[in-house]
Amino acid sequence: MEYLRVSEAQRIVLESVALLNAELAGLEQSLGRVLAEDIRANRDLPPYDVSAMDGYAVRSADLVQVPVTLEVIEDIKAGDMPGKIVQPGQCARIMTGAPVPQGADAVMRVEDTQEISANLIQVITTIKDGHDVRPQGENMRNGDVVLSTGTEITPGVIGILATVKITQMQVYRRPRVAILSTGNELEAINAPVDMNKIPDSNTYALMAQVQALGITPALLGIARDDPLELEHYLKLGLEYDVLLVSGGTSVGVHDYVRPTVEKLGVAMKFWRVAMKPGHPLAFGVLHAAGEEARQSDAFVFGLPGNPVSSMVCFEEFVAPALRRMMGHPRLFRRTVSARLAHPLKMRPGRTEFVRVQLTQDDTGYVASSTGTQSSGVLLSMARADGLLVMSADSTGLAAGAQVTVQLMDGTAYQHEMNIRE
Image 1 (cartoon, rainbow, N blue to C red):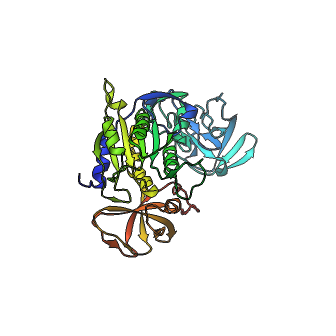
Image 2: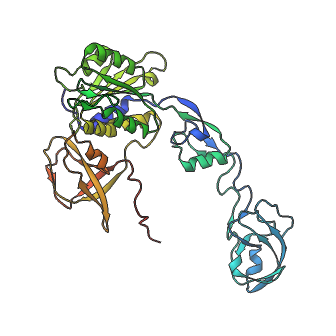
Image 3: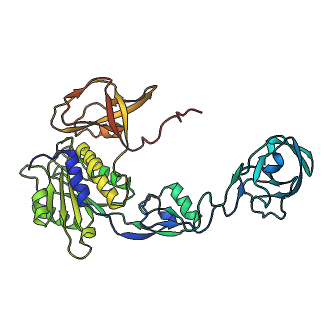
């Protein structure tokens, strides 16, 4: 099989996975989930015209010529209902959020008035009807769809759900994910230190990447380079929606993952991608039978054994697939444009993902390499703010070139607000 372009491999993955079935979730546990139903308003909000400011409810027709003296006929606090109708030459003292009384059509701010006595004020500014009044239904109208199917539940969305008194809602199910590392050379995290072994970092780096999507994965441990042992672990993993296997997917004589999963009925879609790091990436589907077969298919990602390659492949292929299964409309990491701080060289033929750190100056983001781009140097991922994407036909970039950087965790925040006031 020829090496696939990154975009083609992504297309195959995303066309293979399906949106999972819906399930019921409580409001307190719904953050980060995706709505599988439309949510409608259960009332008008505000339920009547209310004041947007502390001030006086007035008749705009009384303010054609100012200054003018008005009689204060009542005080209306938030939560109170007006008891009087405002007549010509009258007004009502009103607090923010309180209902506007009949007869009044605007609110005059306190600072635009002068108090003459306890029940008389002088208004010194003209206003039009509707001024500083929040009209009935400005926020939502009874029966209107306020949240649509496919909406990601953010803190703001939870506020809306609470507003319309939704304590449980239908959301798309999270996929069940299993993680398996392979290789005789690996040392388990709770095993004694053996200088001839390699610590199993892949299991836990992948675990964290899965957890960052709101999913708690099952850790299957380490399978040794033995076909029977590997088959046992793969059978366990194929009981999940998604199985992530790191190592053993290359073409060496002891790389047993691909032939073993094929023996177990997995149809391999591809196993080579023209990317760096991460080209020995495999993807396959174990098709289920029955009426809801597509929702019950199991998906296998054979990730490279090198830790950086494994993590990069997760970002580019696994995370978008998992997000699609959970109903998220936005599948990929946000990207920013940056200026390259130094030249970069590369050999054309593969899309390259360069680990970079980002700083800011007056012109915007500046991207600098984390150093060596060896796929075994996991510290480069720990230090990276993002992945600089270099096209497969590039031979390199000069210092100062504009580049695209795919942001990693934590880069949604910055040290300063950096806004104009």
